[in-house]
Length: 301
Image 1 (cartoon, one colour):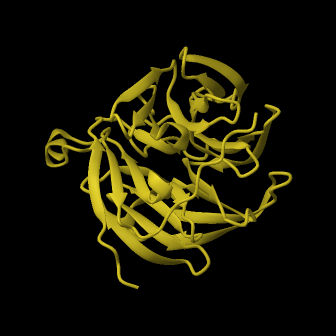
Image 2 (tube, rainbow, N blue to C red):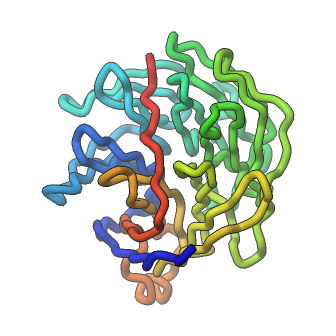
Image 3 (cartoon, rainbow, N blue to C red):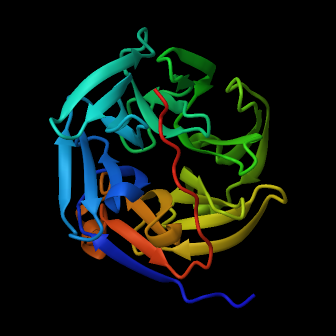
């Protein structure tokens, strides 16, 4: 196979402190994303190039589409509904009530419309935090919450296999991409195992998405790259380097889901690094990957 020519461009010089959770919304030709410490949910219109944003009252770590309209988001330790028109937020459920220093981190909706998201202790510096304080949860369509496991450091990237039988998950400080058997009907997960261990120069695994061939793409925080993995063989298939170090997450979008969008962060970079990487905190678009993604699932509640 001839590698197509990969092109990387910064489509939005946004200066996000910590950009995360990119999600393509086909209906509006837009990319949703969050800036966690800035407490902002943003929506970039790929046609007009305009950005709209809603500011909330706590760190907002993930956003997802909602079947009934509007969005859902993880804000602080709450699963919330977000009405974009009037910028109102409604709390659907709260977790980790006994852990005052915790917040949600990455989240994504499963093929049955449940909103999976995990928590972590608030960082004192990027990737510096009290260990083992987080848990993985999911918000069911009826708004009840199930907890899957605890002892998580930094709950991060997540996605599901194309046949909906495997759940892929990253707890960043394990430097591993893990797989679980997954039951679509009940949302239960079991039989955890590692499918890929990161190499030193790949740094910290962060956000993740699956492509239409069932391969995983992982954004490597401090590694300035996204890597494509085969979860069945445990082999890395491709590395795409970006002009910024703190790549945080990735999703497919655009026409036919043939473009990849990558978020990144500025927090934790010194003045010198910021001068070297002026696009840090921007939104990047990668074209020419020669593979497509799949549409995001909407929350069913």
